[in-house]
Length: 513
Ligand code: XMP
Image 1 (cartoon, rainbow, N blue to C red):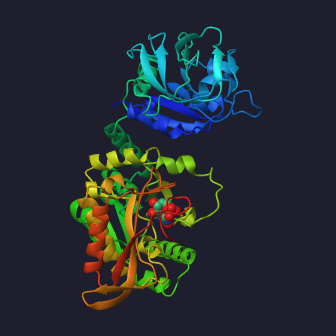
Image 2 (cartoon, helix red, strand yellow):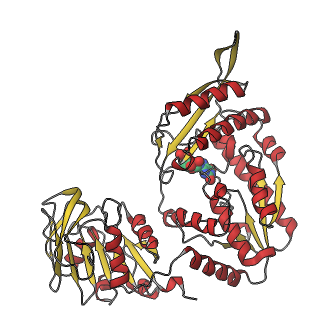
Image 3 (cartoon, protein in one colour):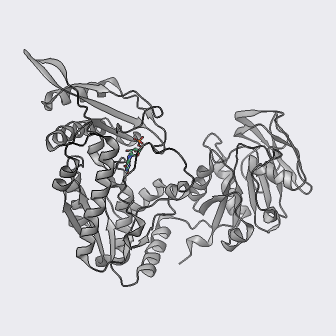
């Protein structure tokens, strides 16, 4: 077996808008890649034995005081380096080139004229579109470097020293507007770093399974399963590794969408034969939520109750030292760097407290979401789980404004099921980050047949987003809105009006609580 991690590329992040994107593109080229802070010491970098290093772009100017730097030994370490935008300017600055500040700003798509197509630009032709976003530019490359490409306003759009295997590009090969960017990155990976491209979903699974087996030995393993894509894929992977020694605990807090609990049970217990403890805890959660209207209080109570239920169930199982969690790579990159105000206290199934005494098993720590999905498909999980829209840990409780009770849950579940059905029917489900319904507390007057109604409105929320951090309200076609509205008002007697939330995030949030 070839070792997928034998070929590691490290991206040093200088505060790039597209830092993660570079890593994703490299992975798409079947080479394993990780993002590290720009000032990672050389010894740490060398200990990882990377095949190559990519310096990302960044907003700073290399000659500005306090500009982000890398370990000075990096360019003499004998490892191929590709600097992108700021990364290239830093390389030029450090190695004796001439970087001019803010002389000719260049943004957007430009024609890159290739002067040398020996290695980095191999197979690209004489002209290729490149996406630029820079204020500084290189007037003269460092000694030993050749100019590999230029544009109308940028004399050094790319440079390289093929003996030292140091390269730089002023444009962004990672963005899709740079249509041959993939080829540029592939040339760097394959022709310059000598990678073979063995990072595939299959090799990942093989490797992850072996790793879980080595980590857990003969011990038993627990997994908190929510039915969301991350915990589902983590569970399926752990099951492949340890089989019957895995037990999944699915805490059904009674705040799930219509039919969701059954689907999780069917997929894991009935279909995959995984040991699944289905804890029906609706009563407990509803008792804890009775009369609670404050959103943060709801979230806290649900989070605490979840931990309590989980602890009780785990205690019943006896000695289980390992806990599988569906932590994914963006969580790893982002954790620790956040100092933002608490807008909402998130409750995640994966967010069990660290002091529960388990050793964590996190097989997806290195993966981006689309890679997690690929792994899920390859492990035989149904598309309905693999491509499921995100669903918050506190479930429908934070989509019911005011007090949560069984009756209101039932109303929302019915409305929500119609929304999902129609969104799927219209072929929009996968294009939307989320699409769901909210139930407010107020009521309004309507007329149905010859009768006056006085009932709840339902709010429709559908957003597009890349990561949930920002979002835009979705421009749903009018006929889809009409169908949802007609069905909701006709089929759910407690609802007599449908309104559409046309607020993006910010200033709104995606969920209403
Ligand atoms: P907001 O409402 O903050 O939500 O714009 C951003 C994304 O996070 C999801 N969300 C949660 N996910 N536990 C979760 O696992 C939570 O407590 C939680 N609260 C919000 C939300 O659905 C959206 O995708």
